[in-house]
Length: 146
Image 1 (cartoon, one colour):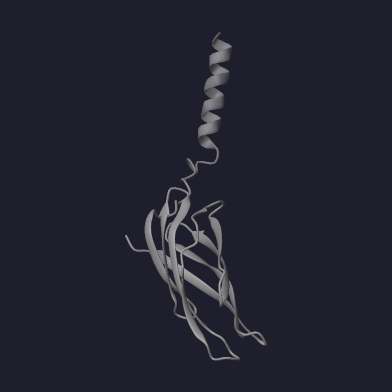
Image 2 (cartoon, rainbow, N blue to C red; image 1 turned 90 degrees about the vertical axis):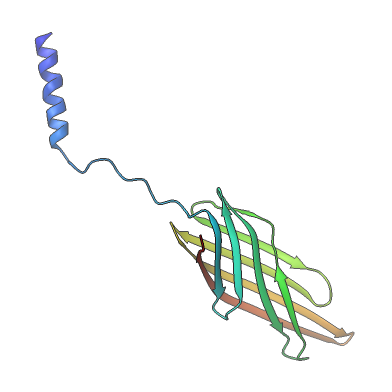
C-alpha cells in the first residue's frame, strides 16, 4: 500500500512541475446585442447578435443602372442566419421591375469585430427592347454598439 501511495505522490509532483501554464483560458465569445457599420461605399448596415444567430439585419443600398440612368434604393431585411464557426451568410431577392439579388457573408473576430463581402445585382427592363443591369461587390464591417 505504501508503494502505491509513493507512486501516486510522485506522479502528482511530476505533473505539477511539468508545463506550469495553467488552464487554457476560454475563447472570447461574440458580443451579444446591436451591431452597426458600413459598406466600403458608405451604405449603412445593422443587425443584432442573439445567441448564435444574426437577426434583424438591415442594409440600405442604392443601385444606379448605367444604361438608363435609373436609380433605385433597396432596404434589405434578409431572414435570420445561424452563426457557425464565427461566420454567417444571408441571401435575399426582390422580384419585380427592377429585380434585385443579395448575397452577404460575414466573419466575426470575437468579441467585437465582423467583416465580410456583399455581392448584389439588379436587372431593369424599362421597355421590351432594353435590359439594364448593375452589379455591386463591396466589403463591409461592423462593431457592437452596446
